[in-house]
Image (cartoon, rainbow, N blue to C red; front, side, top):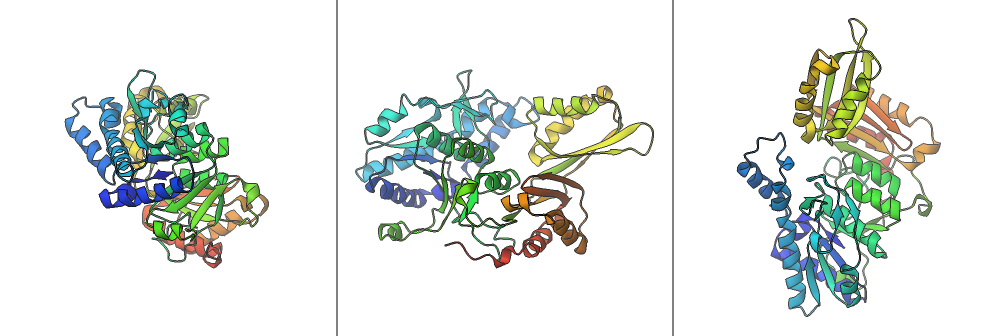
Length: 419
């Protein structure tokens, strides 16, 4: 069971979480709980590091003490929940990442899980203990605390489920499942009863906030069955036998009715960089994107077009807005080596994507998307595709208009509400 920041926002919310945990324990299940920091706590801790840091790095997370400080929020929550369960007579204990130990790579601030030995945690669970694990954190090869990046508690939960052979992994959040789009953008959004791993992976990587991308990758790789539920539901209803609404994340083969398009996902945390008049020679693009990769900067939509003058090309790509400053600094240092004339950055962009496993066997999805946007006067800046998704980069002021129009165009407003 994993509970996010809004689910553990204060003592009253933690008390409700304890009720959900007690329900599973009383049903005879062995339970591991992964918790995030209280809502807003991580932002507060990050701000403290910014104010305390004197290293002058382009990103505060490059400071190794960043991980030490920001991981403290989860430690507090795990201790409070364990104490609350103990007060109700349950055998419970808090676990920090280093105590398990949850071993990670050395990329502090955005580390990846590499191993979870079961030597310590499994015997405790077998003895009847409810393990309350601090999410988002582990221990790097250098022996220091490493954090997994925002949303890392999801990854902690799925990785533990895989390592322990759990029956399922329940992700409790502030929504009762996965919707066809953001319900805050259109009231016509519909909750989906089942979503394939592939669809959820695309949704997560393209901006959906329900699950973190790496957690879905792990679930798909190790066939961990996921459920997305709301922690704001009433635990007493479950004691009375009522099934709480949820979305199941599972193998595609388990989904009987496959929609051509299952969702429209907006992402506002985008930026665009354009390198002007790069010499059109073999190896220039390779050098650019190799340097970005070495700096742990992920790029998405890449477009190369002929420059107006000489034997040169303009290269543009999208990236997460939080990496923009770091990318600009890196590229500035490569100007003479790469040979571009100018770099143009744009924060006023958003990515809108349509996703669905049904796209594999149906034509015309792209045509519908482009016509729908054109009819609304929305210009497309970049395009990228995969087997089950089409993404476009547009000016950010058109984000909500694009989402509503595409949701309508693909008939998602007519889907029956999930049971």
